[in-house]
Amino acid sequence: MSFDDFHSGRELKATRKPHACEQCGRNIETGSPAYYAAGKYDGHFYTQYEHVECRAAGMAYAEETGLWGEDFTWFQHADSDMLADFGPWLLEHHPIVAERLNIEREEDEVEA
Ligand SMILES: [Zn+2]
Image: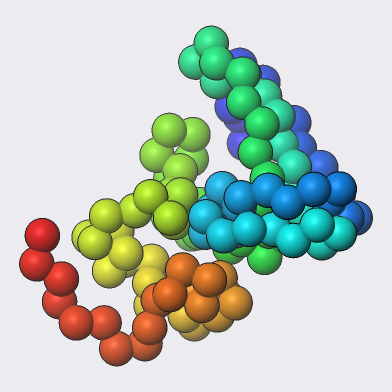
């Protein structure tokens, strides 16, 4: 997989302070394992933290859909159409992440 600019990440055994997870938006508790990444994208430096489960789900979903780079799916920022696509998939394959995003098995149609 190739990214523009640069991107590097690694797994932390334990965070030293709380961080919001980039995928689900929830807090990663101090002392929890987390995925940490830093890089430069489109001229902007960034750092991000993710729960290891959220990271795994995000990567698996990109693998499944071929949506990488700027099309990469950030679950917490998805609109209802996107949610309709990945919601059932997350429930089936990554239930921990689905729960963090408050995705429930029986979704009513959401009118925008
Ligand atoms: Zn998360």
